[in-house]
Image 1 (cartoon, rainbow, N blue to C red):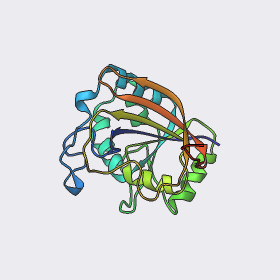
Image 2: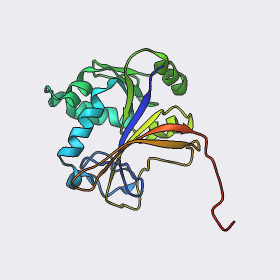
Image 3: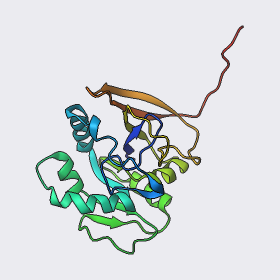
Length: 204
């Protein structure tokens, strides 16, 4: 059994929509595409490189797959991120695509949750999810995520697609690593810890 790891950029209020630039995802009238760019520095880049190194393959939603396919084949280099995205297998979850053109991509057929469970039973390195806001909602609802890697940027947007939606299974998460970039971005890793426990804070 291998780990399914979600890596995403989020704001302080949990928005993950279109962090990288114009045209990425303006759906819903989102007006802040590229919101992470002023905070992206060498420390964030180094952390992403480290995280990408552990990927065996990727699980992507349709939107993120199309964004990656439109850009990364034009940026092939020795960089581990470029090598990973361009040459490792990408499993694409989509209700609208009949086929995928990238030669290292595979369209998931049948029930998504069952397909992901089957991928997790395989030997090898991490199955990584990047971006893919809609896909993440399904994975959270099916309780399939083993680790969250979040880079939290010091900005509040007020609206947009968020990491945690209404269908997330209640869970506790254990912080396993933390770093801070020079621009104030928090780089955090959480392992799934178990069920939610409650208590009481007040006078004895």
